[in-house]
Length: 131
Image (cartoon, rainbow, N blue to C red; front, side):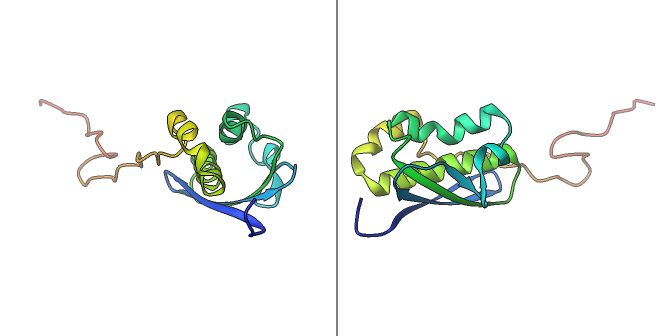
């Protein structure tokens, strides 16, 4: 590891923003002061968070702490995945092609579309009546 005590990365998805810190040494993933399996009970979200470490075979090598705000569970899990991937690249440029190929370094640009006036939601129109 470099001379710093930790390596950091910022991840974003939908409205969620995650600040990720990677520390040397084995340890779990701590999200907002709690283990990630408490914060994310769904297996799908836990796998999403662990994916960058698993694909680079660094699962037991880092202790991860995360501060995440905004959005819902899926957005937060995606933001954490993005942040971990960015921190891993900051740690070692060698990992960049692997993470890029898996799609972990690309920020998912999809966000909720704004509601337009005259409509019920972004695109749903009121029911048309002929008479």
